[in-house]
Length: 498
Ligand code: 173
Image (cartoon, rainbow, N blue to C red; front, side, top):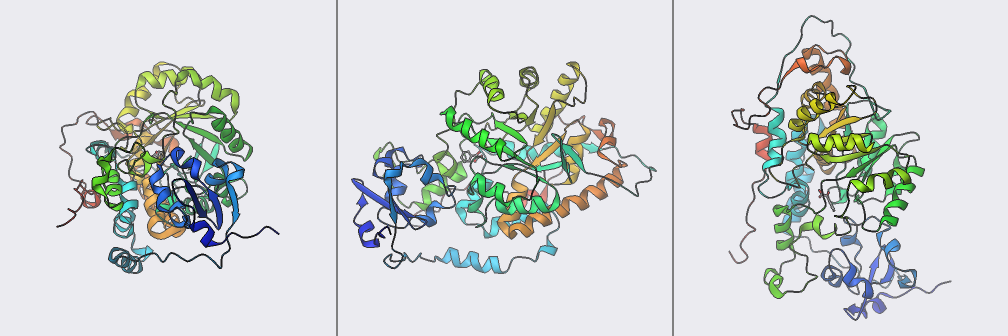
């Protein structure tokens, strides 16, 4: 029998020279890890000698600490009778949020994906909303992602007997009930205690494909374990500076049956999401100390930047053959924005590209994936057969309606990714919300395909859309009021002593 460590003993190691913390009832000596912690040492020191589980959980997969800390630093199990429960202070804001949570509209009053966003904005903790909804700099691109869809107008066909319409798709060889996949978004437990598992379970039930994020709050294996037998899953990959770690991760994923690898190529450094950065600033409650010049203070970085330092900015075209050598999964480059790079991807022999600007979170004033689609499809057509069964072109960013998806497909996309739409669905209603989101999309596909005169996805052709205004950024489009009403403009944090 191993002896249990008392809470009092742990509490004696509460400083920089000897720092123990409790996570999931286990005691860890993190003294030597303090300066290596991607989120900085300060946040760990806040929990020195204490139970850090609650702060740890949303931001780390359960196995992050066990895999990163040498085994000799695993001190043992804590005696549960000796820990003084840190009673978390329930703030007025928490109470208000709980009341709003209890008063959420019933799911059957949710009519579209924007509605989930409105609920999420109201009930999410400020930090979670700031992280999820933020985009880089002036947040122009995130809005352009929506606006671009509204510069495309339909040219519907009539009298085609649309009694039966079929919107099922094949995505990278996998059957999907929708021409939509769930795109990767990080840190799902900021929004809901079950995190990404809400997506996995709903996707399994409704035949939709989920792309697992590298930076999920749930561990990769928890997500795969929550899938049904044979449920197809994709994996989004951030490439680690330590390629051995990436290799192990990719090969483990392949062994566990993941069907495709989406390598993120638009984030050698994370964009400045100022809404997220400001929130962090306020919550740590010590504005002035930022100026003290401690190099490890990352409080002004926001959640994402604080945990992204492992991402390798040296990633280049030269690495593609290496990926090929470590996996047989189809490789897709996520974050392509130009015909030049689309052609390089084709020549590099990958199986596809995602035309994405990372939900407007990276280079602000980049064009929308939808606008890039037109130019990229034209370039690919010059280079060989089209559609090319060995090279898929996906689009993501700003998709909230089946009509958006139909426009992208008509212009040549193989399928479309939705990230935030599903994230807001589970943040506000858990798995039921995701199921409802899928149902809403189904209803929208049925109606829109009937009205457009397309009985299946193969009948969606470029002639069904007028994209002549797509490249015009003059802005004569009517306001998108539903979307704009949830858009949160950048605000300075509340003044401290006001
Ligand atoms: O967009 C993001 O927030 C993102 O991709 C990310 C990257 C690193 C850590 C967390 C999130």
